[in-house]
Length: 62
Image 1 (cartoon, one colour):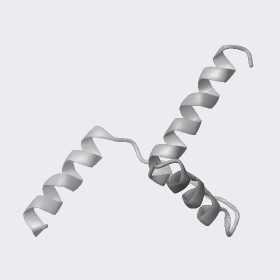
Image 2 (cartoon, helix red, strand yellow):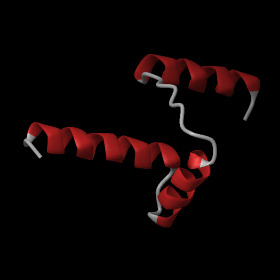
Image 3 (cartoon, helix red, strand yellow):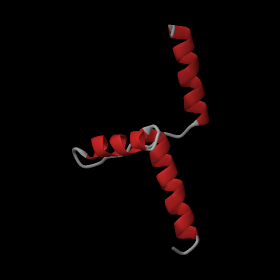
Protein backbone atom coordinates (compact mmCIF):
# COMPACT_ATOMS: atom_id res chain seq x y z
CA UNK A 1 0.00 0.00 0.00
CA UNK A 2 1.41 3.39 -0.95
CA UNK A 3 1.79 6.37 1.35
CA UNK A 4 -1.16 8.23 -0.18
CA UNK A 5 -3.54 5.29 0.17
CA UNK A 6 -2.36 4.66 3.75
CA UNK A 7 -3.04 8.30 4.61
CA UNK A 8 -6.47 8.11 2.98
CA UNK A 9 -7.32 4.93 4.88
CA UNK A 10 -6.15 6.42 8.19
CA UNK A 11 -8.21 9.56 7.53
CA UNK A 12 -11.31 7.46 6.85
CA UNK A 13 -10.77 5.36 9.99
CA UNK A 14 -10.33 8.49 12.13
CA UNK A 15 -13.56 9.92 10.73
CA UNK A 16 -15.69 6.76 10.86
CA UNK A 17 -14.57 5.02 14.06
CA UNK A 18 -13.90 5.72 17.72
CA UNK A 19 -10.83 4.14 19.26
CA UNK A 20 -10.73 2.52 22.72
CA UNK A 21 -7.49 1.44 24.35
CA UNK A 22 -8.02 -1.76 26.32
CA UNK A 23 -5.62 -2.81 29.08
CA UNK A 24 -5.59 -6.47 30.14
CA UNK A 25 -3.43 -8.53 32.48
CA UNK A 26 -0.19 -9.81 30.95
CA UNK A 27 -0.87 -12.99 28.98
CA UNK A 28 -4.60 -12.33 28.57
CA UNK A 29 -4.14 -10.83 25.10
CA UNK A 30 -2.89 -14.17 23.79
CA UNK A 31 -5.87 -15.96 25.35
CA UNK A 32 -8.30 -13.50 23.78
CA UNK A 33 -6.61 -13.76 20.38
CA UNK A 34 -6.62 -17.59 20.50
CA UNK A 35 -10.30 -17.67 21.48
CA UNK A 36 -11.25 -15.20 18.76
CA UNK A 37 -9.34 -17.16 16.12
CA UNK A 38 -11.02 -20.39 17.27
CA UNK A 39 -14.34 -18.64 16.62
CA UNK A 40 -13.17 -17.52 13.18
CA UNK A 41 -13.05 -13.85 14.23
CA UNK A 42 -10.46 -11.15 14.56
CA UNK A 43 -9.70 -10.02 18.08
CA UNK A 44 -11.45 -6.71 17.33
CA UNK A 45 -14.59 -8.44 16.02
CA UNK A 46 -14.68 -10.74 19.05
CA UNK A 47 -14.33 -7.86 21.54
CA UNK A 48 -17.03 -5.85 19.75
CA UNK A 49 -19.36 -8.87 19.74
CA UNK A 50 -18.71 -9.52 23.44
CA UNK A 51 -19.52 -5.90 24.26
CA UNK A 52 -22.74 -5.96 22.21
CA UNK A 53 -23.87 -9.23 23.81
CA UNK A 54 -23.13 -7.95 27.33
CA UNK A 55 -25.01 -4.70 26.69
CA UNK A 56 -28.00 -6.61 25.30
CA UNK A 57 -28.05 -8.92 28.34
CA UNK A 58 -27.83 -5.93 30.69
CA UNK A 59 -30.72 -4.19 28.92
CA UNK A 60 -32.83 -7.35 29.21
CA UNK A 61 -32.15 -7.45 32.93
CA UNK A 62 -29.90 -10.50 32.75
